[in-house]
Image (spheres, one colour):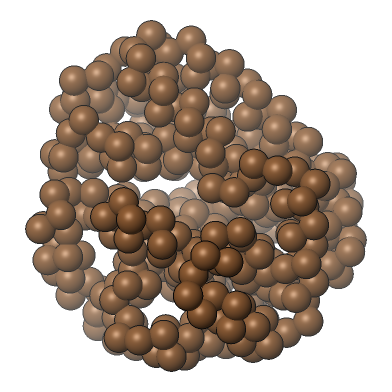
Length: 358
């Protein structure tokens, strides 16, 4: 899988379908087999469904492995393991037998430990009834720790991965507590960070913290031995908040109907009206454009940016949204021809691979 970082859409898609996705699926087959052996029925069910329903999270995140050069397979192993922890814990919290913030905090310490090679694994299920996962979560954490521990320049990025990881964990705790506590907690949390990001609303800040893309970018560059302190700083600034925010706002946009039906929190619901939401999405697209130009391999990051827009807008769930068609048309126009390329490519991928929608 060694090769230069792709700089055009066709080369990128060829490498993704030829090299990245098959190796992602191999990793997921291993974790599926581990999940099947989990003794506790509830934990087993959530582990298996998180992989089955959210494979595309690992597929998308693993595109960053193209930045890792000859260590791209290590990058895929890390990304799949870390994203699998994220998706598994999301299922445990979303479909939880517990509504205890202490439980959610303890579970998400596994994501922080995964980014700290010297940390010992803990009893992440301490506050919940279901405990026996046969070592599944510890294995995921230790896989991440092993790869990061072997990465020579990890100390150059660790403060940035840990910062992004903590923000992600904070969001998961606040948004999964009992319904009447969610918004007050999220607003209070934003107040602690508002001075740094005065141009964001509380729900936009929350969305920005909910992506793992910045971590995957940092780790992949570090594995590719291209890291220095200035680059680590720039990656964090280029990905957080705007690229990550665009990622998660798009994710929430396509889930609006489903979340309303299920009574789940959706950050897009807090815009006053459709035109305001469209204007803010445009703002995130434009700011992401500016920020990724400051990175090495800017064409690659621009393609990820455009790919996010195209991939999410191509989701079949968009067709069930009122004004979905006009929203897609306007956002593709703002985002440019590459976004349209990824939009139609993803539409074709859905046709050839039914059942991907999640």
